Image (cartoon, rainbow, N blue to C red; front, top):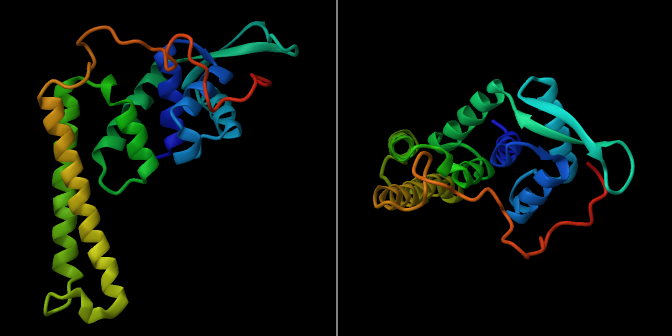
Length: 210
């Protein structure tokens, strides 16, 4: 999967309808341009590409405040809604995805019902445990000491450490969700605003493109 697709779909969905600069503004405030490939060009490309694919509906609205063609606003279609939740579930479930994909999934986890989010995360823990068992079963030296393989043994130790730390973090998130943390889907109103009132986005540049 691609983190940029999940990020852009999720950002548009939070607003109902959003233009390109608004999506970019949100993602930059989250720092997504630092931990993912959500750069300005990628964001605008993703919006146009997913509109062509029928995942979004494009609307030309009022002219841009800086001149030029009308500003384009996007909203998710039914297919876009389905794709968003497919990517979100995949990001939380898979144990072998890239860190930006997991980060995007956690960023939108509150869009899922609490029980479903917990169930997905429990399956993620099980997958991590299975992966760890496979590593130790097939990639451990006969005497059980990675040092026997020299520096190559560090790879196996890294895999095991990654599985253990990933499972530990996921169990902690499960525990927090089971304890009632966060407002999940169907549990009440949540603000869709990324920026608190009166706060200037510290990452964004002056608007120049739609």
